[in-house]
View: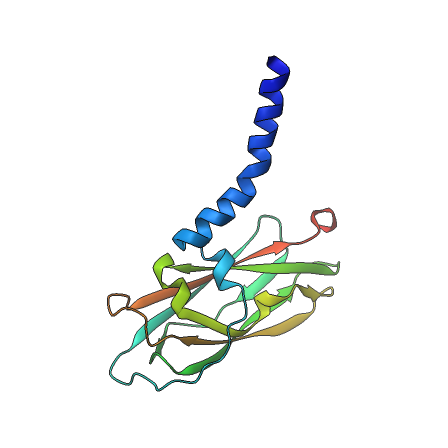
Length: 166
């Protein structure tokens, strides 16, 4: 009986990841599953009667010796307009480091209306010792964004893909 309980606990733990992904995709929670995919660029008319504020944020995972310069200030955009911005990354270590940027959008209800057509988060970023690089992001806020959402925050968490190289 005790062995069966152990096997059941293992199976439950193993099933948590697909269950979590399923719940997030159905509920639109977290923004990771839906906001890291490349959106198809569909040109629509710009909604010139409305402005949405887009704020930018970045977080470095503990121990990551990088410096990230996010876009300064807030960007006021008309839904339907295509925008290009960039983050600047600098590797402050003496080793080559490969990093993955994990995006998140708040409020989470706005995730499906924030479409990235080009993003540094689609691939890992590798910087050599002391190297700096501009990382581009191209996005459109969908015209269908409900009027009650006037501010969207785009946040990236930068994580080292190889924990042994820190």
